Amino acid sequence: MDRRWLCILFGEPYEAEFQSGGGVHVYDGNGDEILTYTVGVGWHEKESKAETQVHGALKAAYYDAYHAARQEINSGIAGMEVQGGFVARA
Image (cartoon, rainbow, N blue to C red; front, top):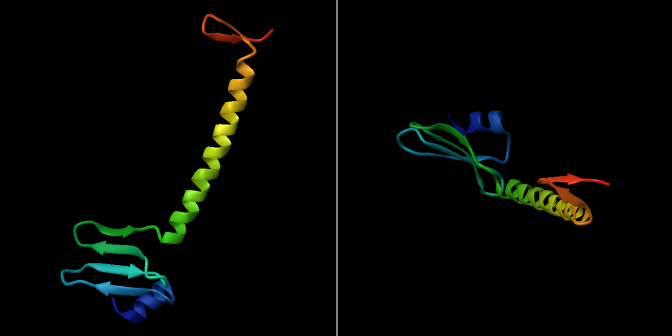
């Protein structure tokens, strides 16, 4: 695979590094490795730094919402009578 094919497949601004033995490393415009090919494994996609930041923000938002919901559930259960391991509402 040469530079022309990389540009056709991935578009600009991607760069690739070829290793002897058939390995290929593809980098995005920020220099983050986003795709790798090795003979024993094949193609392997990697997250860019921007994708990692987005996933981190989504996980934090989900955790905050989950934590708030658990607190609301727990505060509602505190005022209920528990019978035989089940919450019974009066």
